[in-house]
Length: 206
Length: 410
Image (cartoon, rainbow over all chains, first blue to last red; front, side, top):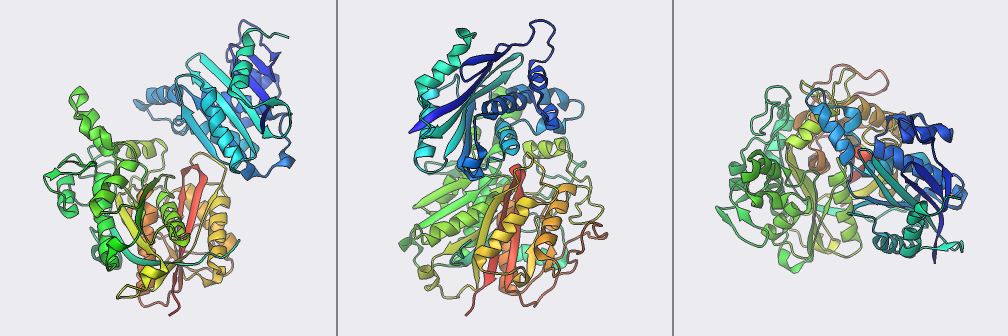
């Protein structure tokens, strides 16, 4: 049986961990929300500043998800899968890259013009070497993610999985990451529970 | 790591900038004739600005070579002029490989194709967009990477298994490794394995954006290398089970004895400076072959000519082979970097090296890399006793693969 052992939701300038609001930046004047999150939590990973917006959002969500969620000693690198999804792939960065083409195409932007690069950033940071996949849906399809990840875990392809949704387009961004593990008897891994955690940011402000 | 049983190579086929078949390519390798030139067929603003290694034929000439007529029937067919260059290159080389293998009563065996590519039919998609909203939708149906594999399988009557692998520049090496597994596990008797890629605006512009293209002809493993030249082509092996090998009139003396795939987990497009992924791929492939580093007589390098690849690959070779280095060279100095096809093209060269006792030159090498204690071969060498050849293919995403080909003990 699989369980959701940690979750992290980032949306509308607020940040939830395991269903609880953990931080809201001061409302006005915060130029770049993602950088302010990085600074607020005192992360030390200079490569963060080179990432595109999607990479930054996914990296931050994974950092918060795993900071006290995953005991790396329990797993080999090959045991941990990453399965993510969103609606617009890397379109935010594709637009930014295309804007540079008339002048000098930017190599720094070009390398981010694929959404699975964000999975790479997370895997490099946490040294995950398991299965990974990126899917595009119009909106978060918890049922698909549940079926896909359950199949990986029940067929011995992964013993833990970081899964969910990371979406950035212009000023709009949303992340919902879940850590799925076996036999830890926390919150059962179901589409309903993922949707419920994703939705909590509107109601829970404790 | 356990040793795997070797898989026989029964035939090879190739098309590249240095020739439309095995004989022409070998002749160019012997004569030191590189395939780079000004862009002649790709429609791009970089004509006369960036050299590439194009296959020296228009699409209609390729249709003739592939033996496809004005009306191409079948469920995956298309009219003449509409078939992607990627698929045409694939059909020409895969057919040559099957002809070369000359397997008696091929219909009686379970036969599959594992074909790699990175651009799919994007050359036709680009043609579609160049005509604005009036393009023909038939051109776009070939866009995805699996299309050419299906189309070629239909043309060659391969009906038991077909799949497509796309892992950037290691694609074809992984296709060959996977094909060998299908034979080893008794799933198929004959596998055509390798890959194809045509030049497209997308790849040329993308590599140009990464600033890793040389504006002159590339100089792999040279201290003054400036980047890579893109190329195009296709290369396939025919891998067969022992039962099929026993029916061949001319016994092949080459086997794939080892294969490994590993990942750097370091950067999106760059190799780690110490080449840890390439080291792991080479080391594991050797272990699976049951060989020691000193057993390798020749390495067909990945050797793209970029600062990053050649240093990472060279550092990994130093770590694995020190102090005795095999002969080595990058045949990308002839064919350019053919991306998804490169592992197939270079596997063909590696098999030919085992069959004929050849070592190929690394063209335009002048200045040793200060970081490395070895230099590549610069002359074509014939009649060298070659027992084992390693072929390296390292791709974006840190995806690193090595193949080991061996002369069979008869």
